[in-house]
Image (cartoon, rainbow, N blue to C red; front, side, top):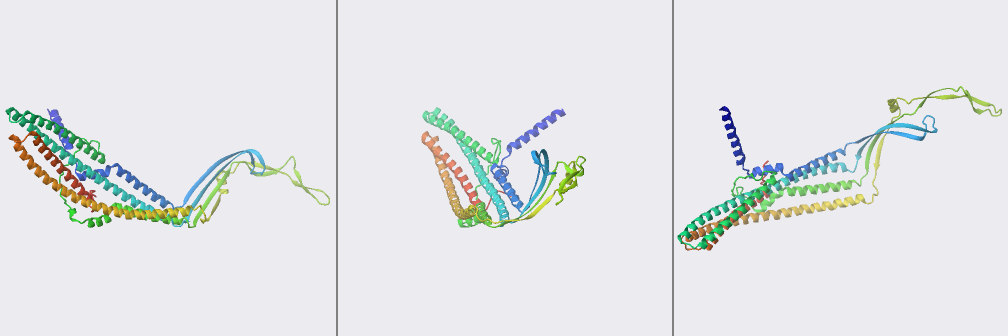
Length: 478
């Protein structure tokens, strides 16, 4: 009994969890925040920011000395000079050598300093680029989110219209049986029902595709069960249309990332010019070198009298030609000295300062300076163009939002008129004073008016979001 009770309880809990999971509906803010964390394009831009940090570390490294160690072991086989006798003979010798070289830039035309400043600016530019990518994704998510809402409402309209026509078909069947209307009118209504079914299928497919598009922006795989809240609020809660286009443009100049990116790129171009000019300056470097060597050949450890030839003639006395004799000794050879003793005894060091003055390098330095000047001029033009583009975009967005509001209000008035015309046509059709063709025309015009209201509503919402975006009201919540 207890076992059944627990099984029933588990089933109920699992059912509740399933219902809650299915009941999850995403708000626009949730979609935007999720996309910011998971969108592929944003992740790629984040990696670019990491590269900029690595470049800065490289710029800092140019201020540090360079230290390199080297070691080698060699075999010399064949005719070699004996280091103990100085004579050439066939032998095999081995040598081990090791050393350390240190170099440091003392002066390089301020290139290292300017490279570090440029790296800091590149980090700032990459951060701006990341924010821009986040804002672009947020706008794309908002557009896709509103497209889902539009398709949901459009599907609802098509289903409601299908239900009305199905009821009308049943009503027409009764009128045909009673002889009030001809059978041809019933066939017209039947064709209309079939067309409504087709419209419902098209609307369902459009909704599914819009969910897929939004899910891909969010990197969600289960797009078929993905649902969004039915938020149809279209109030201009920030009263953005009360602002003038000039005020919005002034605000955009302060807040828009595109302008900051263009100005940061201009500063980077200025640093590149300074770096290029620094190549004309002399460079001063300090250096230090340590090396040592170990040989594995036999060495002379002493001498002993030569028993076979105790003396040898080393000269003669002038006048008497008497030979001058000297003791004759033989060398005593021993093994090489211990490794670390040789390493200590054979060590050597060198240090100093080196100056390099560029005189003629195939115009490479001058050409780099001219290229940097051209890049700087292009960056200045890019800043001016960005300001012009921003001004045009702001004024266009303001006009689009105003026009979208007027269009939406006009579509509401048109829908009200079409609804009245349809109600009047229905009354006439029900009493046999209107044929099915004219009635279907009235019905089609009403459906088109309903769809137009939905379209203009979400078009207005999106254009208001764009205008708020230029005014610094971001969809991204920190």
